[in-house]
Image 1: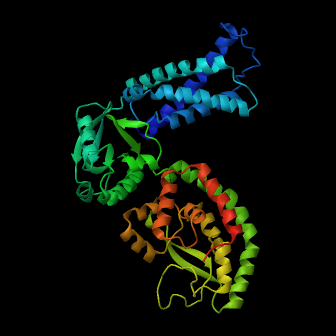
Image 2: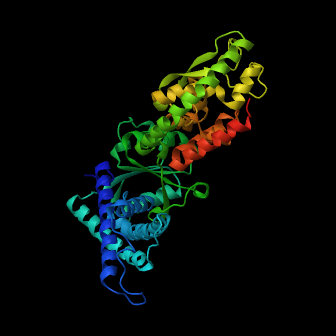
Length: 446
C-alpha cells in the first residue's frame, strides 16, 4: 500500500473518522463522570447526545472535512509532525464542530471542544503511527524540473534528505526538453512526484503535459510558485525545505467532481428538458418562418479527452453563413446572425437543445463550453494550456459564459475555464447555475 495510493488514502480517511468518534465520545463520557474546575459540575447526558445519527455522524464528517482541508493524507507522518498538520486538523475539526452543533440546534460546551483537540490529536497520531508501522509508505522519488534559484534550492533540499519521506530522483533544468523526451507512460522517469518551477514562461507546454499526465496516471504534481502565483492563488501550506510548495490538482476532473456533477445533471437537467420542450418548439417555428433552412443544426464539437461529438443547436445564422468563410467565431453586430437568431443568442435559447447531450452524458450542465475542432486546433496552437479544458466534460453553461460577454475572446475565456478546472468546488457549480439565470434574464449577447 504505497504512500498516496487510493487504498492508503481510504484507510487513513476511515481511521480518521473512527478516531474522531472515539475521541469525542471519550471526552463526553469524561465530562459526564468527572467534574472539572471552573465548571458547573458534571455534564448532563442531555447536553451532548452520543446518538450515532446525527451526532456521531456529524463528528465523523467534520473530521474528514478538517483533514481534507489540512491536507494530512498526502505526506508521511514525519512531515506532518514538522508542520503540525495533525494539530491543525484537530483544531479545525473542533471549530467546525461548534458550528455544526449550532446549526443542529445544540451548543457544544467549551470544555468538550477544548478537550477534544488534544484527544483527537493524540489518537490520530497513534493511529497514523500504527499505519506507517504496518504499511510502511517508503521513500517517494521526486523529479525536479526547471531552471532558476528555486529549482536549485528544491533539488538541494531533497538531495540532503531535508524533506521526510521524499528523495531526489533527478533535477532537469530544461523542463521543456525533459518533457519532450518523455514517452508519456506513467510519471516522467518513474518519479512518484514531480516538482516544477514556475519561473520560465516557455514551460507552459511542459506544464500542460504534466497536468494531463498527472490526472491520467495519478502521480503527484507540485509547483514552486513565484510571487505572482502566490498572490493570485491560495496560501501555500506545504513546503519543500523552506520554499512554498503548491499542489497542482485538477479538482474539476476528480472522480468526486464527476459524480456530483452527474447527479446535478440528472436532478436539474430532466426538469429543464421537460420545461424547455415548448419554448424550443416555438423558437424553432420562428427560425423557419424568418429564414429558409432547417431550424436545428448539428455541429462537431470537442469534448472530454479531445473526443469529438455532435451538439444540437437552434439555428441563429443564415443557412449559408459559413459557405464562404468556414468555421469562424461570431462577432458583435455579425451580419450573418438573423433577427430571431440575435434574440435566441441573447436569451441563450439557441443552446437549450444541448440538454440532450447533458442527459446522454456527453456534456454536463456546468463546464467549459465545447468548441469546434477547427477552432480548437487554432486556439491550442496559440495557447498550449488550452487543451487542459478537455480534462472535464464540456458544459451547457460555464464560468466564462456567466462572467464574460457572449463574444469574450478565447484567451480570456481560457482563464475562466482553467480557474474552474483547478479551483472547482460544489459551491462554484451552484454559483455558475445561479449566474446563468441572471445572465439569461439580463438578455445580452451577440
